[in-house]
Length: 481
Ligand SMILES: Cc1ncc(COP(=O)(O)O)c(C=O)c1O
Image (cartoon, rainbow, N blue to C red):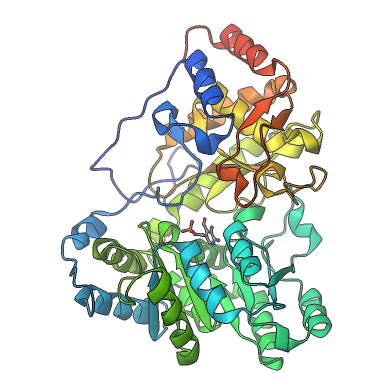
């Protein structure tokens, strides 16, 4: 796994960085964790971070920055227009991603707003490997509709398929034939497909998608938010790219796309977002939207300090020591969890270790919101904040019997943040919970709001199962936190 072998035969990930600034974290007693859950409506997004021991909700904006990023922020040129910092960003985008025109926005979904407003018209169809929540909302808000092209096997959590993010090429051809290319502004490819467990697509598949796009005169939009990790897994899993540099794989992936965008909160360990392209007409259309919604086209809603951090982060995205850190911790966690019998998404993906909540809580029905119940129970027994990625967040608010494709709990591994002993603690408590899983009970909605409800909606347990879980915890752990 690691490029350094241990004399004692251990197969554990080894960090190639050192911590020089640290932040204290606090583990509350289980009774106070229960109070925090009640206050937060049993929705991990609504927990106060001071009640959280290990914040493994997401890697969005929570990756550790490097010393070079922090120091780069000090040289920001704050000029409203024509900033030197923007010129440096253009140069970094051209050098790392190979695109000529750079358009900044204040975060990933703002970039999606810009792209979809500029390029989608009512009645349009966007074929994609798989959706991300904010992407679909922006497509819909502009009168379009997504068509998803993953093979059904991609939703099997425990499998050997190395590239679950691949497009089913037959489905793509069928989609173009059925809707007609005039209605398709672009095909969207999402690197390290987030909602199925951070699963990559292969370069071979992507090149086939490019061929189909060319045959039909279509553009490709690459969501590069998790591009570094997808490129890293290509170098590990795809024969033709074994030994290739991350920089070259990233560059090839961008060369195959007409428009590339990323949330810098993930890709470059900073804040903000960037869109880039060689397509001058598309750039002109997008510039107009930026000027209305984001600010002037050389800062796009970001502070220049953030843009300096993005610039340095772009170069660091080609550094395997940095990029491999989170995937190798995730792989370690997933492999160990599987050995303990815990149902995980395999092969290990990126951004987090994903637990199959449907199998973990196989005594619950889908309408009991198992991944939400699992995330609440996991916080209760560990103080670890994980994310519910299932029906409570992905289902149809107007029809409780429409279920998400997968029922996952994500234990995120932001880059360079958690130590191996913290990782082992998170695993230990997950194993305890697995052994006591029958105590996890059903959840229900306190209310049913609309878009992005995962962020906001309070949930509540049905019955007194949290009290029973607390009692068992006290029995097994005594005074331990
Ligand atoms: C694949 C993908 N695309 C887009 C976004 C949206 O980015 P942001 O959270 O910066 O708005 C995210 C965020 O997690 C993402 O994972």
